[in-house]
Image (cartoon, rainbow, N blue to C red; front, side, top):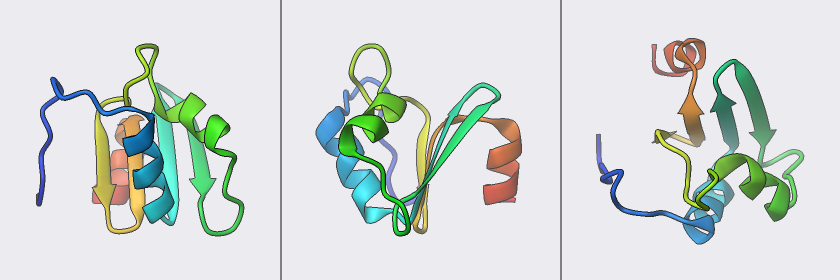
Length: 85
């Protein structure tokens, strides 16, 4: 792990978009609902991306993990196992 950010630190729309723009793929997970975004092939509008990545308070949903060119937002055990091994 290169960097860990405390959940107490609020990360908003600007940070979420910066993470997404650097990524090749963003996978947003809300329980069993999984929404993948291919940022190179078919990048979504910023508003659509933020609607998925931000929680009700306007902060980046937790947990958020960046591995290589993939950003994981939220948690789904199957996806984490597939990505992290």
